Amino acid sequence: MAHASWCRKCKACLVQVRKLLAEGGRPRLYVGLVNVNEVRGVPKRMGVEVMPTFQTWGGGDTRLGVYVGGGTPTEVGVKIRELVDAHL
Image (cartoon, rainbow, N blue to C red; front, side, top):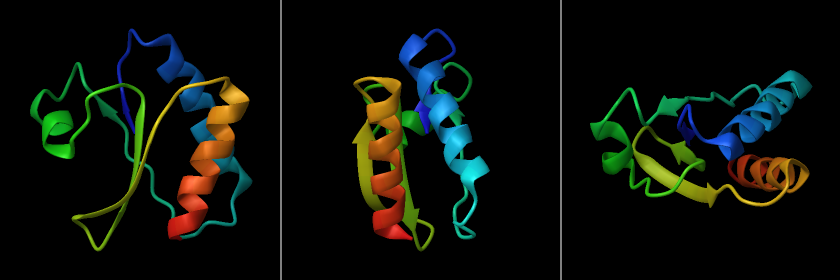
């Protein structure tokens, strides 16, 4: 997940990501957080233009899906789960 420390929507989305991880049942799920304020070049290489951005990856360097966060925290939680479950 690409996020920024100043982004209120990102903070709400992080809560949803933590809930997803706490649910368990997804042993192949690994979550990486990229703070765009701390790692300047990585978001550009990942194609991140808007925060928060969620991406699923397979095989190390193959991007399988992307979701740019928007909506209520509940809607974001649903979209993240759909994205993750579609590729696990």
